[in-house]
Image 1 (cartoon, rainbow, N blue to C red):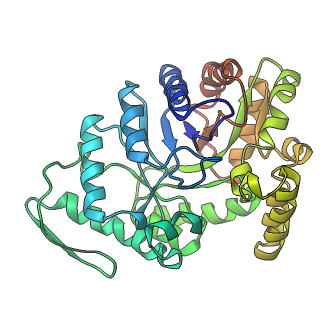
Image 2 (image 1 turned 30 degrees about the vertical axis):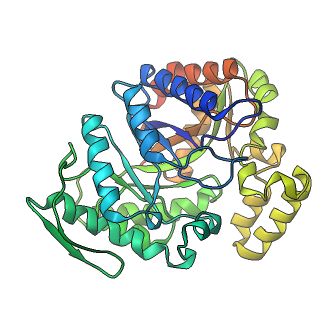
Length: 361
């Protein structure tokens, strides 16, 4: 298995943005010392109550300069929000600055809120994301000037001043559970993954097929299939649950309506009604309970416990959910930094060594 420090860079009470970013660098520097493989961030916009990360290029640069061996990157760039030529220029420069440690996640974006202020249509976001893969391949493989004429992007006579350090480009990720997109990912040697909001028993079916497609396209190495959720490790299960469970149950509060629209309980109630109307039965049940502490712990929706317990939960879940890369969200809610850093340290010192040679599939 491989392991990532994953961060929404959630805002925290009584901490300014600059203090929150500095705390983030301390987290990632510790992960670098403890043999984590990756550090990733989201790209979110216009919800200061939720995420403080709207510029993943700055995250990748900052995280890379604060570490020595960790591979870092966005998970991912919301491609439709960018001029594609500008984006490939940034990608190339960052990869050179980090001497080839960039991982490149691409996403179409899941929240309509991110699109309207940019004057971009939310319902037209997917095709540009897929087309950008061919765009960056064209840009980075051209020896001189390049041209690209697609359905979404047109570029003529552009010559990049800088190419990526990694040839032909940094490793690509597109997190998806859409069958057509997963086939595209397999064909183009693109890693994938999913979040806790999708049931692992359903994911097993999706990603087993993706792995079969990957093999059929002739790739020899295994792809990375990631699973992302909250994790907290303490000396005992009792200490971990006491310190983290209630906090973890509020970790994804950002998927709810903004705080000014009502109490936490009122917003959860409205969220549950929306989920009932739009999701399949299993996914709806999971999402309705992602704020329920009892459901979280009973169903291992988040991994909370001693090093031994978290190791066991990860091993079992990676088999049932068909993932081989874990994206751990360590910093959530108002978790004090002392507890946060202890959790990361215990995970790095005990969980990673136990699972680094474990192969779920």
